[in-house]
Image (cartoon, rainbow, N blue to C red):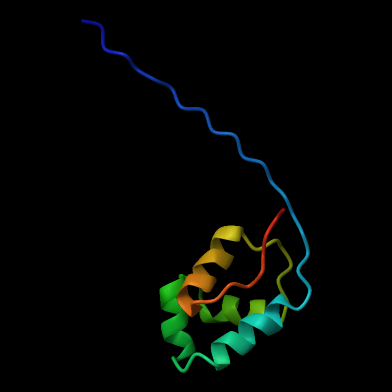
Length: 84
């Protein structure tokens, strides 16, 4: 019997959009959360420095959608980031 081996091929499509006011929405959600910033950062996998850069919209490269989804999960919110 022949053993079938499959090669997986992945295609990645990069899309970039601007979301004005996203930092402010993140800040307001964090301030209303009641947990410490350190705890929220641990849950979302984001450093405090990076978190403050996000809140102040001082990110000079694109933020990955994965990071945004982790922040949404940690805060239990929808930040309205979509690419449709």
